[in-house]
Image (cartoon, rainbow, N blue to C red; front, side, top):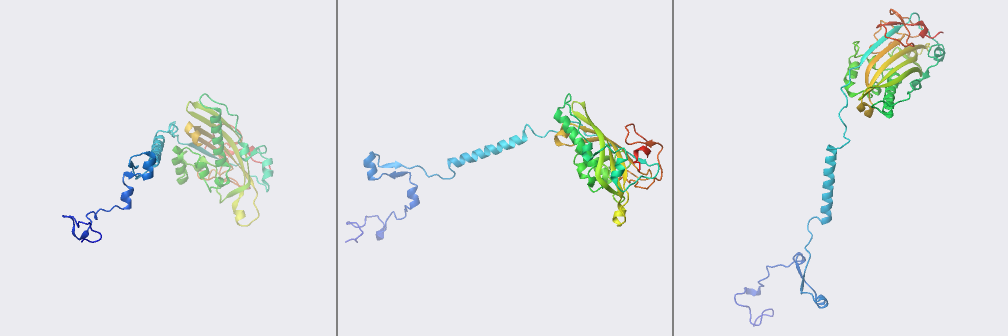
Length: 361
């Protein structure tokens, strides 16, 4: 008789011996069952719906879902669009709209006093007795004129050109750190890139060649000799804008600056404060602007004509100005008297400071 688990007739012929199940090698684990495409309805489901015995199961979702695929596709489209717009952007920065900037042409003329430089303990006393008595203080002496549109430039563009020119004048002649030679960057950042090499060469290798004098770009004194006795610098002058062609605006500036100075070594030695004296600088500057300059708030400085005194013609005024201070006299003078307060033509490379331009003390 067979064992309790054997069929009544015993093990079928040809079957495996030892009661082994011939399907033992086939394993129906949980993952296999879940992956089946057909699933049998329960008896209750078959009775209720008269459905077939089995139903087709939805395939398992593998990999990314449909929403994830759509999101990836949208990101790819957005990224491609950004790259395309970056290359073909309608507002992409254009190339320079005009020809390269011309080199700056500069003239610096020292004016020698005809006697001793007048001085006083109080700078206000000097100002009140000089032609600068009615001058305004600082940037107030550089008012912007009423701007009028031109044939090819709007009111706002003309105003912008005047404003940039004024900014250059203020930085190059009124900033204390520029006047003492400590800084040049406030002026440099306003220049058209085409002029930066000339500017840098002027300060790296100054030369009296009409192209590379630092004092043609800005006003600065020899800080070892003189210092400001009063930071309220007196200024008077004009600004004028005009269109030169369809692509260019020019601004002409003509200003006189009066500085109160005193000797620096007296303060350093702890001595009695030296008397102050006045130093006058007249600057005629010609600026040029194309539309790119206006957009970037920069300028091309074309001409710089400077008269400054009291100075000694024997001193080199190329790199720094060496003012003659209260009580000092020039070693040598120029051929004719020149008044920096009066408009007029150019003088010789060295002139004499007119007596009327000095304070009466």
